[in-house]
Structure formats: structure tokens, C-alpha cells
View 1 (cartoon, rainbow, N blue to C red):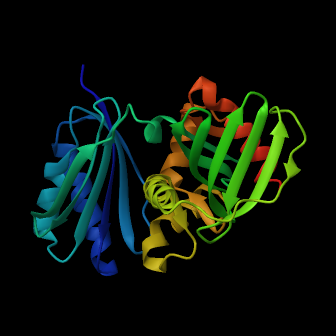
View 2: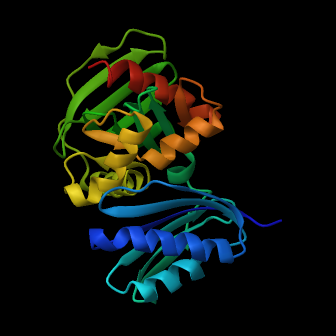
Length: 283
């Protein structure tokens, strides 16, 4: 059985060439045999095609269009979760200028222990990526629509302690709970963050954000597609936003439920979601 691939191909360049390029790509896709479906999410400054296909991406159609429109750049990003692979490529003038493919490390804590909750209008309420550092100790990166932080959480029996940063490489807030359902008690945080831990969590944050989110403060050209998609879907733009394609897939997978929730948390780690929600998001 062929594996399902999620891919996004974005065509950018001279605005006046985009309508003709779009028409040509659609004609080429009709001629090409592929198993799956795609959706268009075009903006004024770029064309975007989201594919769910089995067997392979219809790359030849885009390569042919790239030859016919050499001034346009075509960027492709894809994820094959079942195969544990992801990649990206850049086409110019029919030639692959860049190509990177790598393992998803699907068995790692970074991939498995992720969580996202968004409101019906797309507002990011809570998201985090988590790693386990040792017995009774976890660390990760957490964000919502207006702030972000790295965190460390420890648990010894019922005693839970959460440390978070606030814009710098030092612990700015701390809470202690006697059990998950206890009322969080603010305590004085230890100020220093171990440099090696901070560097590890920064890398985790960069990977998590690159895969799932876009920021309002990024250059307008980078946000053109996402801004247009948010307008089309009726989502609200905040400082930090979930990529529209991710929201769209969540909404489809969840049968239009009002709660847009995604989780790959191990069952033993689900309590961390509740601690972050009760402490960090309520701060």
C-alpha cells in the first residue's frame, strides 16, 4: 500500500506572471496521473497548492511549469509520516536548486510529545513540544497567540514544580503544586538556566515553530499566503498563528468540531498539558 504524503508547493515571483503560471500548472496536473487530491490557497503574491497524495508528489508538472516560467521560484515541502521522512526542494528554471530530505525521527520524544489547542477562529490557545530529560524531569517549549517560553517541569510523587522563562535565558516564573488538581502556588524561581539545556530547547522551539506556526512580525512577503488563507477561512490573525493548512486539516479530521486539538502526548505525560494550562496560560 502506498504511503500518504502531505505536500505544499508554493510559486512566487512576478505578480503579473502568476495567473498564467496557475493556468499552466492546472493543465499539466490534468495530464499527470497521480493518486490523491489537492487544494488551492492562492494569494496576490504567490500561488500555493496543498496535496494529499499516495505514491508520490506530481513534481514533473511543476518542473515543466518552472521551465516555462523561469523567473518564478517553486518551493516544495513534504511530510511522509508513515515513512518517517520529510523534505524540501527549490525549483528555478526547471532545475532543482536545493534539495533536502531527512528522517522525522518518529520514535523520538520531540516528535511524539506535541500538543496544540486552538479556538474555532484559529486563535492559538496552547501548544508545546516536550522532551523527557530524566526520571521525573521534563523540558520543552510552550507558546500561545501572544507569548512563548521554554520550561522545565519536575515531579516527585505528588509534588510538581514548573519553571518558565520570559524573553531571556533565565527562569522568570515558578509554580509548585501538590498534585495536578492542586491550586498552583507561585514560588521564587532559580534564575539560571543551564546553557546546554537552553540551547537544546531553542533548537526544539525552532523546529516546532517552522513546522506548525507563522508569526505576524515576519516580513509581509513571507506571510502573504497565510494572511490570505486566514481571510478566506475567517480566522483571526494574532501575534503567533497556526499555519492555515494545519488548521484546515485539523478541522477536516475532527469533523468540524469546535475544538481544534492535536496531541501526540504519551498517556503518561498528558498531565503536563493540564499543569501548563493552569499555571502558564493563567499567569
